[in-house]
Image (cartoon, rainbow, N blue to C red):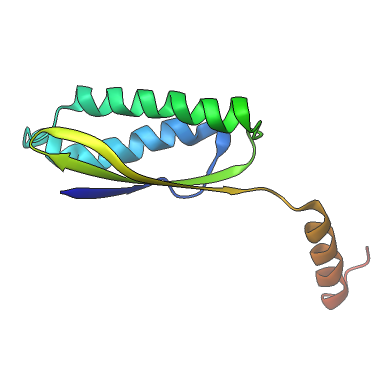
Length: 113
């Protein structure tokens, strides 16, 4: 069985907490049905968060105020869980585009800059 987990857009500084909350919410029913062990899921998430931090922060120096969106496909087989696929999107503010858009909208709305 495949389970898709989406964090939705979240600040880089809060992705780990959001990921854990989303996973525990997605697996809540499976926990209660004893189809999967919550400790195994939390260990998988801990390892994943360590790897994500190593890549996003230590390697690429992504600032904590940048917005990220994480989607993970988990594969559940007979009480075992693994990550089948992952997709990360990083949204950074474009200063030039933001300035130009603000200026143009101020002109349209007739706001004195």
